[in-house]
Length: 220
Ligand code: ZN
Image (cartoon, rainbow, N blue to C red):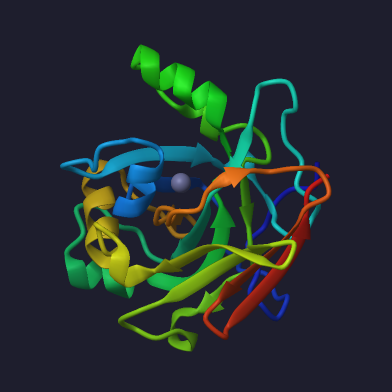
């Protein structure tokens, strides 16, 4: 497996190591509802390891013997400065760029783990569980409101808008940094909007971030 390395959209490498990917579950109310989950009263955080990261443009591959694998399209934030107990302005200043990610989830495994009250790592942290796009500098995107979409085989499947997040990006990063130190090169995934579903062999996924980034990939 080729080692994942962050890149900018123009192909130049980002010279920061990927340490960890810190994620939030149920950050969009309509997505919580579609899976019959309550909206959490505090952020539901989990971590995907660096070994889960792969280039999103490579054909998507995943375990085939553990039930359904769901796509979750998420806005990814590249962290550029160390953050521990960060203020909102420190969190904002630490944002280096934005990209798109798929928080791939073994949904049947996750349901079993949830029923037993067990951690989600086996459903969320497998090799290949975090396809990541190249990043664009934060100045390339609107400051207050970011929109992104997923089309599968030409049909709109997910549409996300940062206005609909229960925990907006900057306070979310500040909160995460009160629980785990974030380091330069870490990535924050900001949750998925509604419309998640199973990956099926042969599908083509097209992801777009404003007018700044467009990536396409297929399912093995
Ligand atoms: Zn997710």
